[in-house]
Amino acid sequence: MSIPADLKYTKTHEWARLEADGHVSVGITHHAQELLGDMVFVENPTVGRNLAAGEECAVVESVKAASDVYAPIAGEVTAANGSLESAPESINKDPYAAWMFKLKPSNSAELDGLMNATSYAAHVESEAH
Image 1 (cartoon, rainbow, N blue to C red):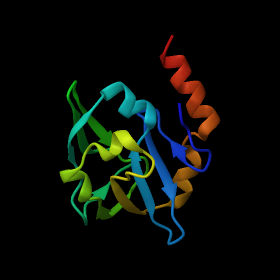
Image 2 (cartoon, rainbow, N blue to C red):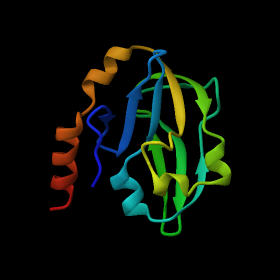
Image 3 (cartoon, one colour):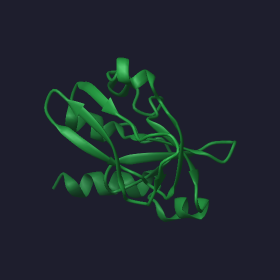
Image 4 (cartoon, rainbow, N blue to C red):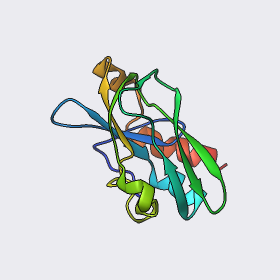
């Protein structure tokens, strides 16, 4: 299973990447897409929406199930990846390239409270048992 070391992770299987411009890209992890299976639908949050950390803000649907996506940190949605609407399977091909939305963080220090790759790998392992 792929867990890039440069990202931060949540217990609900979202990843967060701090971009050079200070925004944070968000998507679902390899583990999440593997559990869900073939993606058939993605609903992203509306640009301009303010999110609280942990708030339900998006939905991914696969042939198996629908799953909520949660904001890893608080912030304002500044972009949504519209290409996922017509090609949700992009998440299955490369979940770390297929970002769902971008946030302007209310407090970028909140990223420090998320798991690193090692902690996330241990979390996934503990869920499997």
